[in-house]
Length: 206
Ligand SMILES: C[S@@+](CC[C@H](N)C(=O)[O-])C[C@H]1O[C@@H](n2cnc3c(N)ncnc32)[C@H](O)[C@@H]1O
Image 1 (cartoon, protein in one colour):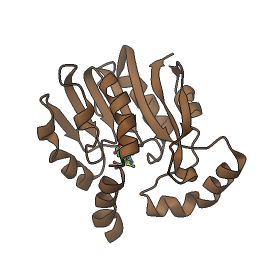
Image 2 (image 1 turned 180 degrees about the horizontal axis):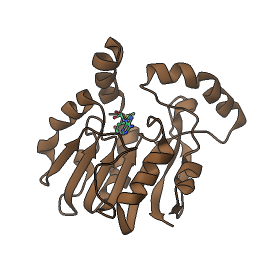
Image 3 (image 1 turned 30 degrees about the vertical axis):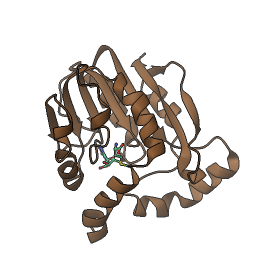
């Protein structure tokens, strides 16, 4: 791992991901989580203040990055429920089948090398009737924007810790066997369009 990836990127992500427009979306979707919750790619813990204290019984915060988990651990005082930070990849979730009520993923499916496998794992650990709550950026429907996403994807991945600009999030989530009622899509205003096309919603195992 390079100096940039180890020391610079985690702090940069913590800073960039505090964006107020993104916080508005966190405030809409994260409070939907209830019961035993798994957040994949918890990063520096920016969703923590948005969980409803009375609704969450336990949170498992999974992220392979030691540095980001360390930053997240500094925010644990913001929540009254127990949080277990797990240093694992979402492609191999260390939880039992049908053991959580909700899986939360925000701006993470872009960075997981095998996002399909991670979603299959999310499905495995969800209880029947459980929910996948997600806010993700990905491939834009506009041909011009998508072409730039394809062009920039390689170089962006090197700057952004393996982040992909051009994943079709709706197709990935549905392809992993989730039904999504009313998928919301659209550009986040005031952000570069290659990064701003968001898909958000709640999936249930189909
Ligand atoms: C752009 S950050 C988003 C962090 C956080 N979800 C948020 O909303 O602020 C992407 C996150 O995905 C995590 N990530 C990368 N590869 C992963 C994997 N294989 N499994 C789980 N998380 C992963 C990174 O460590 C990072 O925390």
